[in-house]
Image (cartoon, rainbow, N blue to C red):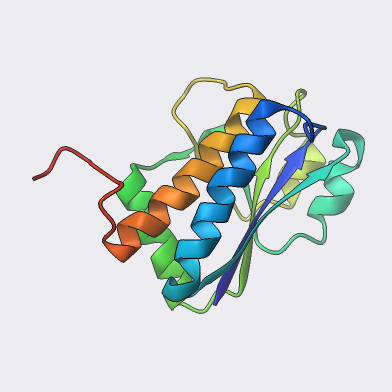
Length: 150
């Protein structure tokens, strides 16, 4: 089982974006169990203490505009490969409003991007959660994902 979690810098507990992220993560959790995925949690960290939290986060992948952009299908296949290789845990990290510090970056095991644009940190949460759900649908053969191929 590969346990996936999201660590987000800043505070958004009452924001509508947070509720949407939690909804998608719940859907991902429901579908992912049968596929060998567990977790799908969203945890917030004070931006000023993000480095401290990152230092103990399992296999942190930072969401950053300099990271690798992947199609939804490639993202799903990548997660499946990591699961199949036996990676036990992975943490996707969304920076706060100020982004990542050099110390944060020192803990990164990799970077992914949602394109070259800079996205507001509160919007990245539901975007990532939706992509995790979409990845589970792709891996399960669920019809949710439509990539134009028929």
